[in-house]
Structure formats: C-alpha cells, structure tokens
Length: 346
Image (cartoon, rainbow, N blue to C red; front, side):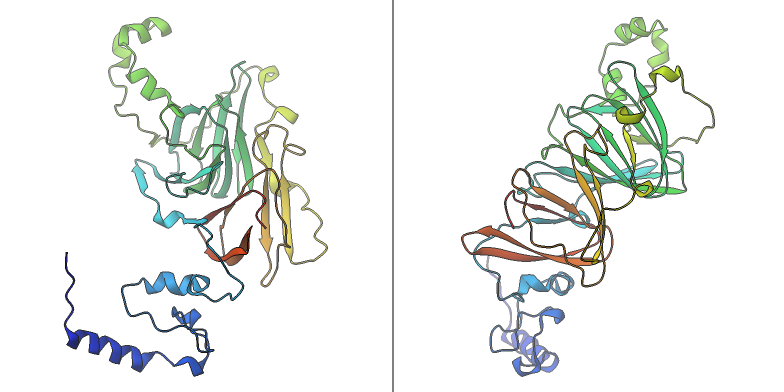
C-alpha cells in the first residue's frame, strides 16, 4: 500500500502549523498537545494524531524529564472498552486482553435502569462491587443456604466469594457500579455461570423432573441468556429464617462511609481502608477509597506482594511508576481510567 500526499497539501499543513503553533521561545507546548519543551527540544506533530488524547495526556509527550527507559503501557480507558447493550442496562469491561500488565485483576462498569436485574449467576472467582451512582438491591446465597438481601447506596461495597450465587437490581432511576474480579482473564470460558444459560442447555425433561414441574414451564427460557433484563421493584419481603441471614463478620456488605477515614497527617486528602481486617468476608481483595485535594500527593510507596490496580472516578491525576533499572514513566489519568502497577514498582 502506498500513501500519496500532494506537496501542496503538505505545504498547507506546514503553513497552518506555523501560523498556529508558537515556537520554542514561547515555552512548553505539552498542554496544547505538542511535544515541545520550550528549551529547544521537540517539534510539532505533523502526522496523524488524536489531539484530544494528546492534550489529556501531556506526559506522553515528554513533559517529565525524569521519565526514562522502557515502561510498558499500564493504563486503560473504560471509554476504549466495547460496551455490551442489554434491555435494562449495559456493561463494559477491562480484562487482560485490554490491559496485559494487569495480571491479577479484571474489572467492569455496569449500569442498571430502575427495576432492571443482573440475572442470578455466580463465578469461579470472587466479585467485589462499589456503588457510585443510584442504589441497588443485592441478594446472595452461599453453598450452605446462608443468604443476604441488602440495599446499597453510594460508597457501599459488596464482596461475593467464588461460587456464591447472586443478583443485583437497580432501585434508583439510573444506577451504576464498579465491579472488580480477582482474576485478570475474566472472559475465559468457565468463569461465569448464568442460571438461564444453564437451564437452557439442560434437557427440559431433566430440568422438569429436578423441580417437579411440567416441562412446558420451561418453554420460554430465554436463549441466549439475557444477562440483564427489565423488571419492577417489589416491596415483597422475601427473607426466610433469620438464623440463615449472613450478618456480622459473615456479611457480604461493607458500608464504607459509615466508618471513619484513616488518619492522614499530611492533610492532602482522605482515604478509607477496606480489607479483611474490617471487612472479614473480603479475603482476596483489599482496597482503599481515596480522595485527593488539588495538589495532594500519595507519598512514595510500593507493595511487595501484590500489583496495585486503580480506577479513577472523578477529576484528574497523574502517577509516575518506577520499575527499576532507571526505567520510569508518568501517566495522566481522568475519570473512567484504570491502571495496573507491577508489584514492587515505586
């Protein structure tokens, strides 16, 4: 394939750039989406580029002189994910195929309209959820018949161990939450099990005998399984024996904002710690809910035994990652971005 561009067009491009881009004497141009440091290094971008992305990621253009070496991409935008549409909501994921450096974690954003239900299902991995818009009703039952039905609002968290069957229903007009899973390859076959999918692929006479019902009851099991479907919010009490309700240390729910944040001597923001010390059910995932003031800094640190996975809900931020051997890179983040920093990286 050959690319031909008339000289007149190149001249027009150069003329336009010359008319609109200040020279190096005018100072750095990173915030304008140009790799020019204002001290004699760099030059304008003349080829194909996405200016909006360049402007929102000035550190990719060489703004930090301390960045050095080869650091793999550690960032993914949910806006780059394929969105799956359903009747009553949508889902978009970040899995290892999207962010190969995230070896331990995959994630998703999910939206439910009022009454919409994420159908009964379970996973071979643990699921951690954070409500950031609206309110939802979660229901879950473990292999011993112990169960929990709870309404969750902004800041509330759930943790379902692997194999725990659960549903999520939207209660507000529009509801949305972050999902995190303790396996990066979440789309792998054998990870998620939907009840409709199972019933639809089991002989009807077997299903009918199992439930003691007429086979015609299962004539309209949806194929493919709906994943999310519309419903109505019911006020019916479905709880059973209170002795079987999961409470206390066994609870699958943690209400973050009903607890005091951790002490922050530097006064640059606040953070809430959520791990097995205060949320005993969450045995495989530990988290912090962090808010930084403008200019606030999370001090230099590293994690010896785990990767750090991040999700940015609001605002903008930047982070520099040092992976040893003089290799470091600064990333810019805005709402909807995720990242995975290697274990032991600074």
